[in-house]
Length: 274
Image 1: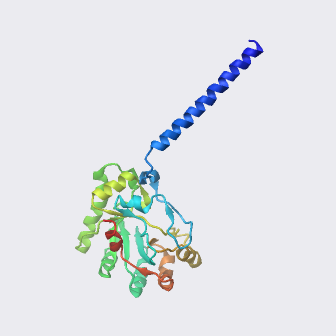
Image 2 (image 1 turned 135 degrees about the vertical axis):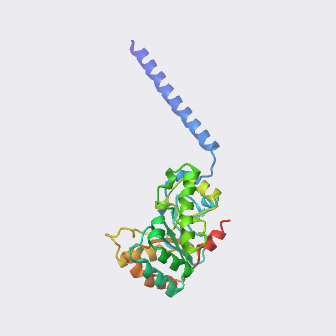
Image 3 (image 1 turned 90 degrees about the vertical axis):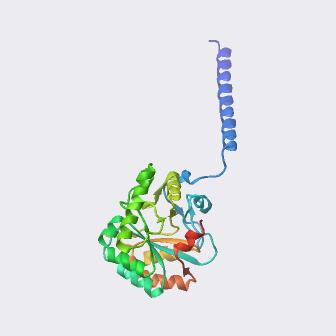
């Protein structure tokens, strides 16, 4: 091939790739322009996540409060009022819950305990105490599975209703339809199913690594997170298995009060979603 022909061929190829790239870019722009601008919770399917960006403000979550509200779900109250909602996840009992209940009673603070089947089976007297002292006992599923992997409504519902049945046998009361996904694993389909079954889904806006029994945080580490990241409208998640939480809760509640915070029941937060 003559040099002039080679350059013609190369020029043609270059022009082809340039035009192809341009066309692709235009097509992508049109697609993005025409796509719905509203993000949905499905974009964050998998694990609940938070990013703390401004002290004293709610963290940025992987779904907004407005997006979650469509599914009768929440992770915090969007308010400037210094209120917080205290919740505990209770997978099993290891001796720390009585001290936690003592501190809550001393400060007259309402809390919600999201329990699993094992907790109801092994610690019915503590569950009765929670109820008698004015706390909410709510649904963390019977077996604590990854609920985002459950696609059948009947299987999803069974994890919740089996726990409710046992709770009613123990307390003689109907369990509130408040649900927290185990490990924060969820999907848009889960949120839809929970709403259609009448549940309010509660995530959280403040938590820290407190669930490893053999690697408990120090008091200083706990206060750094729980005082430094508190914000108006916070839904706080603590684990009732934590010895650190049992040891510091009395002082922690005092410090939060000194910071101007008051405590509300998640009943009030749930009512705002209806």
